[in-house]
Image (cartoon, rainbow over all chains, first blue to last red; front, side, top):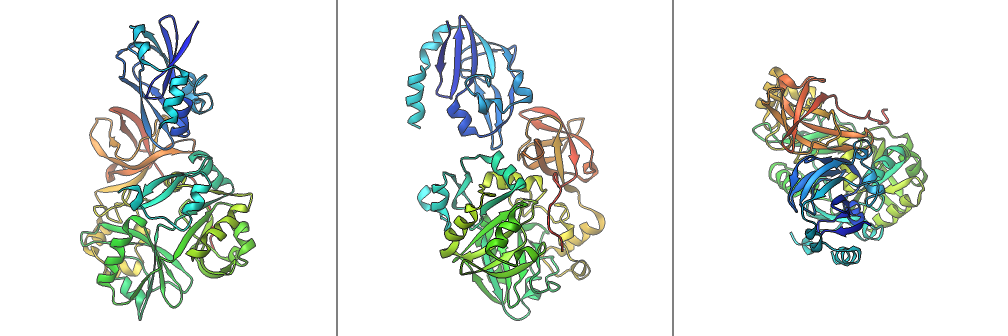
Length: 124
Length: 366
């Protein structure tokens, strides 16, 4: 059973046990515009909640990607190397960016659920 | 600057109505993109035709005896040789040989028609007012639209018969929907196309008529930037500035032959010396080997990590389907094909010095 949470930095994380899959939200990809490059530079490293772990570049600008939780980054999405536009097409599916082994699942309590994020994004 | 202080072009409400994302640019509230997005707008322009609002740029008419000779005192272009209806790209230079702005000068017959950058226009108008003994009329009651792309000719010909016969860098007066328009076969995308100066009061009607054509889409500043970058064209304030000379900027072609012999423009001693002996650095194209864009300000280094220069414009080229950039490097490293590194987020990434433009120009030469 997996559950999806959302951060105020417009990331989503789907958690199954202590394994999380992280991407950016549909709202975020729309704001960024056409994504042309994704680089998760901290694969294999331990990161703290809120650390920047890589970058997403659109035709317009570069934006940092933050980890919504603490843990160890185990994998970047290899499909994005050749097809970064998948982030635009399937932000909350095939356009996932990295996987992380959570060190403290309790941090998830500080994130939003889908309804909470929807309200948050609409307020911006 | 607060939003309320931003100036609006005559097409502002049209942009908002088309769903544009508006941003401050050179003191104006301008469309950076429409719902189609930068990449789609860029590719549409190269494939069919794009309509750009460039009304924020400065349009100025200079009138008086020997006005071309007078303006030559401020620029290195051979303006006296401009025949009626012909136009030329040139540069305002300073005493150090640096560039104050780049501009287009057209011989409109009884006057010179000058178009300058939005961000520099107040300074340029003051510069001309202080230094030129002629009538200077700022045409702020006129809008300026650019129609660019392979379909531009047939689209504009339908409402302005005769424009198809014009060749690149030529101007003509045309009646469009009852308004007197100055049409030039020019632009800043590398594509064939036109710029149309029109009375502000007619701008919405003409823009809507052009947009009604199925081949024409509205294009924002985002795609304007990626199009001009692929075309190897400079953006003032990024690729050109008061500390950059025309020789460093690889714009020697804008210095007329007679002007090279006679001088007589600001900074001529510096610029003519560099023409003869070369400049210490040079504007070049840069193609990163990977997919990461190298943006404005990115350092360019050699294999030993020594600084060669920096990127002044960079991003993703939708037509190239990869990152493209321009920047300045030491002249010794400026040859096409020279391997360099660009330092992106602290990491040296391999790149090569590349010939400009990145996409071949598609102009209609006479």
